[in-house]
Length: 240
Ligand SMILES: *Cc1c(COP(=O)(O)O)cnc(C)c1O
Image 1 (tube, rainbow, N blue to C red):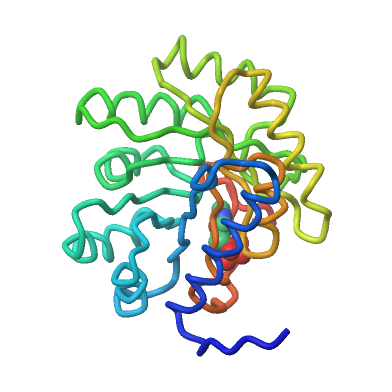
Image 2: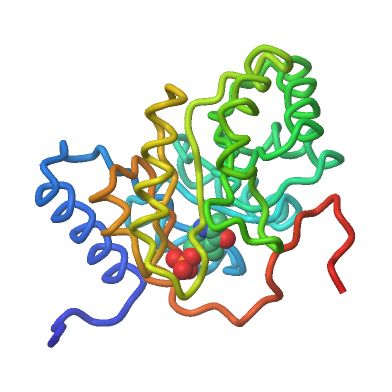
């Protein structure tokens, strides 16, 4: 497909936004109902600045420490930046996470839910909260098993006092993503939460067709990342 636009981060952002808008329309959804999170993990402040300058305000990072190093400076560029934690969280980083992030997508066990609840009460902040579901039941992947999700969301609400607003998933690599997105949407409807965080560079249009309210797109905006080790559930020893 010929693309006359120069290959810059601005042109790639514009192209992703156009694709989001087109798929919203095609799926009969309201414009703006699928919100773009630009995933800036591994990219430095000099690579992120032009994306903020181009008008993007919602960003995703997967490590608390990396985000802490980058975002206090970047936030000075605009007062309406929204920062989303999309990577696994360790309970000993709950304080930093609550202080820094406006949304946390990766709640998947009571230890994390409890630690976040304590910090939310202490700091008086109200990040938007998602429960991560391991829709592919992959042993190496974070997230609660689908059959335990409804009960876990209920415990988040009643035991921990957390206002869970949505569900998040990362479908297994190399599998069709559609059935995983359909499952997450069905679970959200049953549980009674409205936000769906699903879809990445390779499948965000499919996710929008299945009802994603947030898509998390990195490579299609920022370019390819150097390969990194797969994430493991942080409080568990790495499988060897
Ligand atoms: C890295 C990452 C993304 C973005 O992936 P791309 O393929 O670069 O778009 C989305 N969600 C999560 C949880 C990620 O870790």
